[in-house]
Image 1: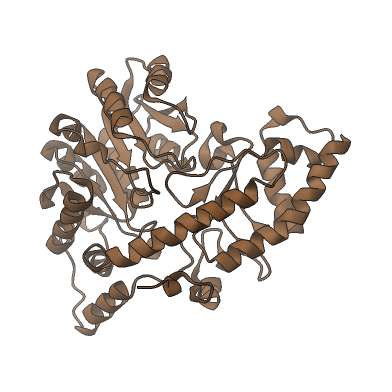
Image 2 (image 1 turned 180 degrees about the horizontal axis):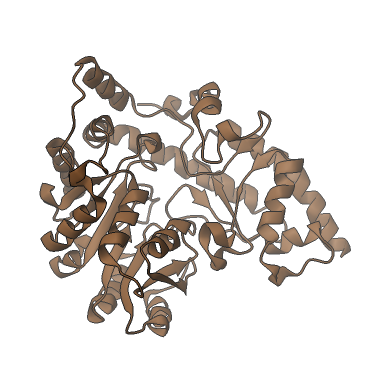
Length: 413
C-alpha cells in the first residue's frame, strides 16, 4: 500500500461537492475550501466498497436483529480485544445509528430530570445537547490541553453535588486533541467511582493517535471500572463511514446494557442500524487495518504541516494535537484587528474571524463558539486537516495574506 491512497489526486472533489454535507463541500460556494466538519475527504477503503457491493448483489436485504448483526457484534468485540486489550464479549456490543445516537441513547437510559452530569469544557456540543434532551443538567468543568489528573479532579470536585450522577469524558479530546494517559484515566475513574458516578467514555477518535502517545480505553483498566463505564465508539473518523450512520455502545454491565437497549426502542424497529452499514464495519475492522495505518501516517504529516503554517500567524497560540485530525489554535488577539472597538472578553472573536476568512480568503472554518464547543472554546478556531496536502496548502496560501493584513491592523491599534 502506498501514499497514492491519500495523494492530491485521490480527493474526488466532484463527488464531494455533490455528497459532502454538514458544512462541507456540498454546502459551500464552488470557490470556498471547507476545513470544517471532521470528515475525511478521501474515499473509503477498497475492501469496504467491495464487501458492500457483494452483499447487495446477493439480493437479500432483510431486517437485522435489534441489537446488531451477530457478525457485527463479534467483529467489533474482536477489534476491541485486539487493539485495546479490552475484555469485550460480543454481547457487550450494541449497534447504534452513529456514535452521536449512542451518546443520546445512553443519556436517555441513564439520566432523569434534575440529574447533573460533569462534562469537559470545551467539548463537542453533543454532550450538552443530549444531556439536556434527557432532562438533566450538564455541568461544565474547564479543561486545558495540559491539565493533569489532579487538576481535573479538583475542578470536577468543585462542581460535585448530591445531584451529580455521571462523568462524561472524550478521549482523544475533541477539539483540544489531548490523549489521556493510563495513569490520568485511572486516577479520574477511581475518583468518579469513589463518588458513585457512572462514566461515559466517548472514544470515537481513539484510532487517530500520534506517536509517542497511545490511546488507552477506560474500560480496559479494570473490571470494576468497566462495569461503571459505557464506551461510545464509531466508524466515521477512522474509516470515513459518516454517511452510513453506524456506531456502537459497549457495556459489560448486563442490567445497564438492557436499560440502554430499552431506551433506544430498538426492539420495536423504531431504532436500528442499516444492515449494509454493519456489513461495512465488519469489512473495515477485519480488512481495513492497512488502510487505517496509511491514513494515520498521512494525517501525522498533515498535522505537522498545519502546526507549522499556524505558527507563522502573529499572536496565535498552537498546541499540535496528540490525537484527532483537528487543530484548535487560539486566535483571540489576532481577531482584534477586525474591530478597533472590540473587547477581547466579548467571546465572539473567533466567529468574526471565521466570517472574515470566508469572505476574503474563501476558506470555511469552524469557530470556537459556545454553540459548538462551550464557553471554554472562546477565541479559538477548529481546523480539520483530513484532506490532501494540495487542498491544505491552497487554503493556507489563501488565508496567509488576510492574516498578515489583520496583524498589521493590530499593530496600528
